[in-house]
Length: 387
Image 1 (cartoon, one colour):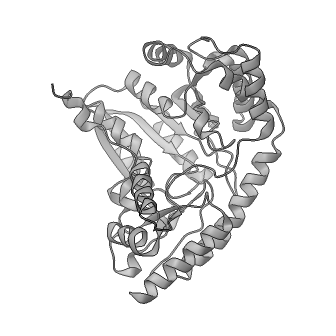
Image 2 (cartoon, rainbow, N blue to C red):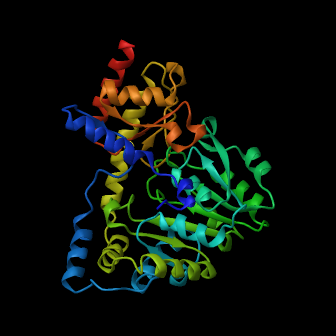
């Protein structure tokens, strides 16, 4: 038997491959500082864990509605309405196991072979993977370092065509940490408002920002009915392993996502959804403290990167990544990534793991302790000085 040819078009996430490589080096006795994986290094808050335990004790261990528990969908609708300045109800919410299904399902429902999908490059690799898997045409838009890693708006305008069916935005952004300025969000809305396309607004890092809060394009007049908001609990509440995400979208698309849920997952685990209600409605002190610590790490780590020979690092406005320009070293992204993990014991990702326009950059996750981040800077300095 052979795999279906469509599998040839499906990509993976480089971070997990690098993690396997780093673990193999550790098995050989090497000491590796892990700055490759993009997940908070904080524990899920105790009151959320307690809610899950209580839900298990109360018997929340059976099937639930494919769309999600009504109580959680109501809590999500209230939260999204408040944080984005829009009015949505639980009928607009789809609860899914993690954030990725809100990339996977709406794209399956909307995209035909030959359609065009515009997406950020460098960007989360699953965007391009899904575009190729569906036989659509990927239309990458380079992110501009000098503009805080926002889109080249002229390039975006020129790339729109009658075949454009989806525009993907991600702010705060993985891998750069960039936040799309409000003026750019308004300009993008003006470009697409009258076009027959949808916008997938990946806002999974919506609560992790350090300066100006990110503006959701759904809040712009005329855009709510054209926007799919992707968010979840993984990043904000350090719940990556819980697999709890959601999408907010027009009702006609919710119906399609429900069908895909029935045909794939049946439903999201009921006890995790009960914990999600507590996460949204309970105290937010843990989120505030986590973001404050990420800010402290960002400031120190980016300052350290900027002191390294050949490095130049713009300070990210959100998420928990640093994305330095390393062209001054004279090495390619792949060569420097390889050297750092093998010779300096620092695991990061090549910028090209996020697309061709990531050449000349590396991505570091600052979701590690302050002490380890400073140790990584010291190791990289010694490596670069040795040459």
